[in-house]
Image 1 (spheres, rainbow, N blue to C red):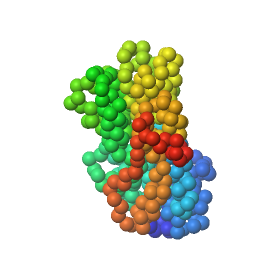
Image 2: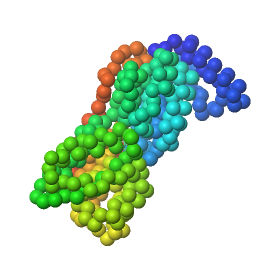
Image 3: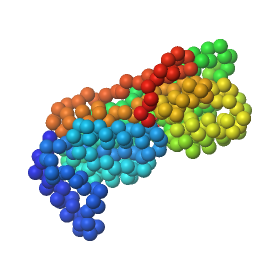
Length: 330
Ligand code: AHR
């Protein structure tokens, strides 16, 4: 753990600067217990937004795990803006937190701020999503899902479901452009289907992981392409929107169009049970406990594995145990 005197002095300096610049420190920006319990690990966590039930579940998981682990959390929500994430990371550096964790909205553009963290001696963990950098020393590890494998699971389901089909037209609604899940889920999916000429991805559009955009995208896809056999949607939020558009067009989701989605929110599992979704690839947001465990190790100066992956499964219409599934936590 870093020198606590240093942290207190750093807090004082950051507040003094704040006072000079703004006439006062924003109370929410100052961790209340920072000078009360000097033994606590101070973790700065920058969440990318609140675009989906998945993301809200992820935030809750991090906040509750911090309380359980006795980790003091400085939490910032960037509301889908990379500039806000960069600003949050700079504020964590000014506070001299022990560890920084963040879920990068996109992969590029982090080198400068992460170099500042490295120069300040603060280890950085990327959670959920990854960054693209030529300097691998700018972050110490990643914790989250194997998005390639999620895409492969989706592809394997399509192969099984459409085993008897002569030709399959696939429409894809992907997530935020340049984000890790968008890139890796798409690549994993294509990797499984490539070489089999029966499958054609007729369109791929981005719905930014948002329900409203999922609906918009599906509406346009249906207008543009008469014959869509399979929808591969990169998250449940967009899928829920797409299903609304499919039903408004007088089609039956799960029958007229095979629906493959990612995340595993309760709402998607319910639709799977009703036959309106065919396959749900799990992507768990419940990574708070492992983030705290790794943050504590980093604060104690220990090394951590470069990659820590969540264990995830896939739920399909072929499963016989769907009714006994435990309630989802997101
Ligand atoms: O990065 C994980 C993805 O981000 C989830 O699939 C999605 O729901 C969220 O917005």
